[in-house]
Structures are given as structure tokens and as C-alpha cells.
Image 1 (cartoon, rainbow over the protein chains, first blue to last red):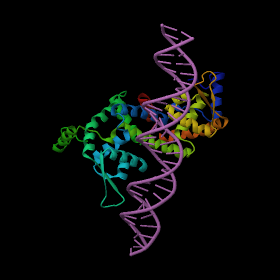
Image 2: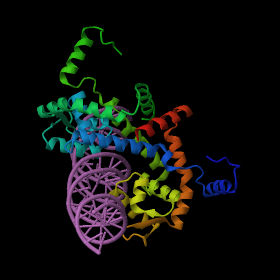
Image 3: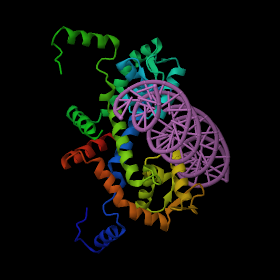
Image 4: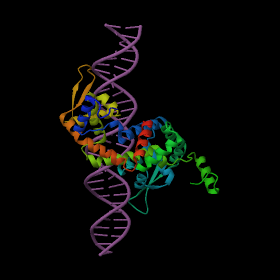
Length: 158
Length: 158
DNA sequence: GCGACATTGTTGGCATACGAACGAGCTGCG
DNA sequence: CGCAGCTCGTTCGTATGCCAACAATGTCGC
């Protein structure tokens, strides 16, 4: 990097940048841009291991259902950090494939209860190790310490 | 947290988990899930500062054009980590708003050259400080050291 | 110079994502 | 009890995000 008081070109560049209001704004250094790229790589690793029949969103819903058991569509959405409109589509596609069963909540007629079917539970058991490998491969470039640090920092930004 | 050799319950849980093949798979601890949540928070901060008229993707394209000057649609896509199909839609919407100008490349008739219009350049200059604030607010929970560490780790996973 | 191969842009299709608006049901407070 | 206000699910519209297939164009090797 050039010091501010370097030579003509450097000074001019600096002047132009502050005049443009852009100062040091470089897209590639922004957190949002980095996050998106890491996310892209992760999704691509996921797709390679899971194939086209299971998306990250569908897997998240399946895994959360296995974790918490039967729950309302809305709550499942909150558990998996999905919008109400998004969880609806995901739940629909899982149900269409027979991986989940739905029934109205007898206690609250607004609610739609969702649970894993036998096929869904079996598929979860089968794919959980694959999911673990996806996380592992995503984090492969990092040491054990670095992985822990990353988890801590990301959790703080959640 | 309980040690592996704790008491009956802990041992049983461990046994059940490995029997189910799920071992310690907890959705909330997976990198992919954390990344998605951080990304969500970032996009939400972005939207609050930029309003509905500018999306993160459109901003990325605008900022990259300001950085590198006129370039082909394809190259712009690579610069901004967007699929060919995605950059097409983004470029289309920017052009419709008069923020960019397009012309065929006289050297290569396959290429479509894209550049910032005067309005686009003005808007970039106006919004660059806002974008900086978005990054700042996203990283607000972290110290200066932590931010640098995060950038390093994310770059390694890119 | 010509044919195999690569690059660029376009299109169609599917799956997120999310805001907004809506109808139906629940709950608490006066 | 009654109703204001909340929650739950649905739908619509827009914007990603990516794959696969395709046509037009370039390039490189022989």
C-alpha cells in the first residue's frame, strides 16, 4: 500500500477517493460479501454430498424435527430461522415426498402440527453422518482452534 | 458440559446417539446454519439503511463497476460472485433504473459491456458511506481484533 | 482454414427469501 | 361477556441463486 504522502499519483488517487465519498470502500473486504462467498462454497459442498433431492433448507427442517419432535409449522420456522412464507414451501415439499406427516392441532385450530414420518426418521438417521461430513469439509481449511473461534464469532453476530 | 465418563445418563445418551448415527449432530452448531443466520441479520441491517430500492446484489454490482470501470456482464458476474443467470437479472434491473449503460463490445461480438451512468456514479458516491455503516453495524458486537480474525477466517473459507 | 473446444449471453425451471396483506382463531382485560 | 390485539397459516409479488440447455461467437491446434 502507498503512504498518503507518496507521490503525485498516490495523492491524486487519495484525493479522488475522498472527493467521491468512497474513501476505502472495497467490496471484497466487506463482511457481507465475504459471508455470501463462504455461504456459496458451503452450499456447493452440501449439494455435492446430498445431491439434488435434499436442499439445505429441507435438511434443516428435517434435522430440527428429529431434534424437537412434532411441532407447529410456525415454531418449526422459528427453530430453523425461516420466514413463515419460506417454511410453508419447505414443509410442503417435505410432505409431498412423504418425509413428514401433518395434522391439525386439536388444542388450537390455527395450528398445523408437523412430525417426521417413519421414512423421514429413517432418512434423517441415514443422512446425519453425511451432514456432519459437509460441516467438516466446509471447515477443512481451518485448525481446530480456528473452528472454535469462528463458531464463537459467528454466534456473537447471529 | 458433561464428560464422556460421567454417569449412567450421559453414557446412555452417547450410546443412543451413536446408535442412531446422529452422534452429536445439532443443527444450531453447524457452520452452515450459523452462516445463514449471520447473513440474515446482515441483510436486514442492509435493508434498514438502504431501503427497498437497493438490494445487496445490486449494490455489489454497482460498487464493483465503480471499482473496475466498464466491463463485460460475465466478468462483472465473476467479480461479484454471481451466477451468469443472476448477474443478468441484476444488470437488467440496474439498467432499467438508468444507473448503468450497456453497449456491445466492438472487439468481441459475444460480449455486452456495462458501465456506470452519471446517475449510477452519483448514487454510488452518495451510498458508499452508507454501505460502510452497514458493515460497521454488522460487526458492532465484535472488537477490532475479533473483526480482523473473522475476516481472516472467512477469507480462508472463501 | 477448419473443426473441436471454450466462452458469452439468454432462457426456463426450481427453490429459497422476505415483506405485505389477508382471514381465521385465540387470549386477556375491562 | 365482548372485543381489541395478538398469533397462525396462506397468498402474492419481487429478487435472488443456481443448474441445464442452447445459440452465437472466439480461439486454438493441426
